[in-house]
Length: 89
Image (tube, rainbow, N blue to C red; front, top):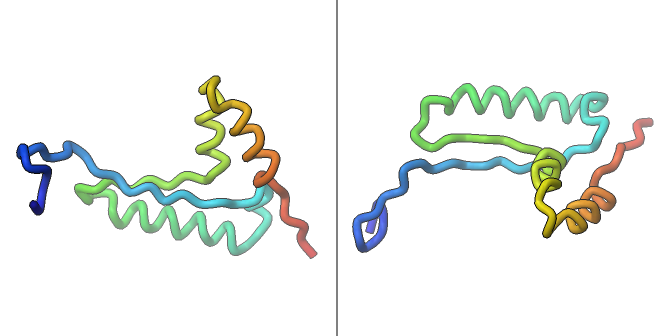
């Protein structure tokens, strides 16, 4: 079956989420700033596609999860472990 399932159901929308990690001080790091520019370019290139493109950092994802009581403690653990500032030389 190329599109949909055996009953003929076809999804209304499809999306591609690009999820990435970055340090809290990403704006101070050239490679991270360039990464943001590349995401913006790609977003513009595919904005008329039938498949929606969305990008989000892990920090943004976790922030969106903070309001869910059943996983609030897990989100806090993730943030404690992975939200860091990179020391620059």
